Image (cartoon, rainbow, N blue to C red; front, side, top):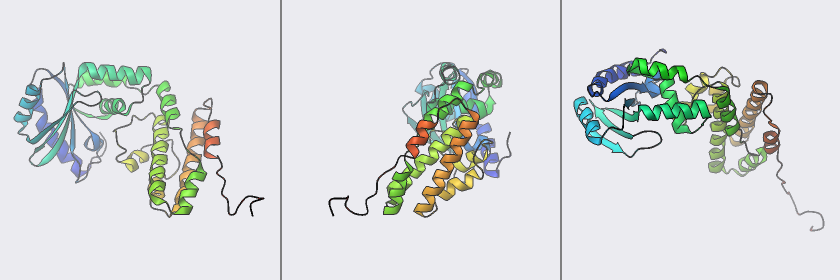
Length: 291
């Protein structure tokens, strides 16, 4: 287990006290903690992300009974999303828990999709990341078998890298920077950073841990194959003045492309480089013949 922040330690202790309320139901086969608590990164704002795995779809009554055994307050239930049966949140002692309910069948199918068919869907990647990196509170034998299956395959490296190699023309960002059109500029700079991270997650065989790019600096710091000083540079792009931000973003793109070419020499990056270099004509005056 990684070094834990103090906020992670007591949240993990609280999760361990909650888990038996779910284990009391014989249909529950595993309980895991995911997210920032499992990775040891939690801070004072962090929720506890709990995953409960059932042998078949649990009824709302079964889930409600387990929450009642926890002493849950302010419970809210959400429609199923992604591969989950249901999601809910509630408070224990004022601390928020987010609970993801899964079935054995859903986890098995997700592993087959991601590891066997190289499915890059974020919701599926997040489930495999949970299996791969979560803290197991119950069902250790079952989860150990899943972890053996969750080794990051070569085909998923290529699929993930190819999906995120979608950088637009530098000239477009330079135009926005020169205009001072900062709202759209920063939206596109964020997209560049998401795609850089997506490529690097693939090269490093790291499953995407969540649907949102939370903890980007922490994640970037874990990546052995990456441009130097990546966490600081990602943060710096969004803090710099516009022209400097564009220049640094494109240095990151160039360095990331070089890493792809070194790691996957048979992957054709020429179309990506051509797209990045695509020119946009700027006119300082009328064309010849119109003066």
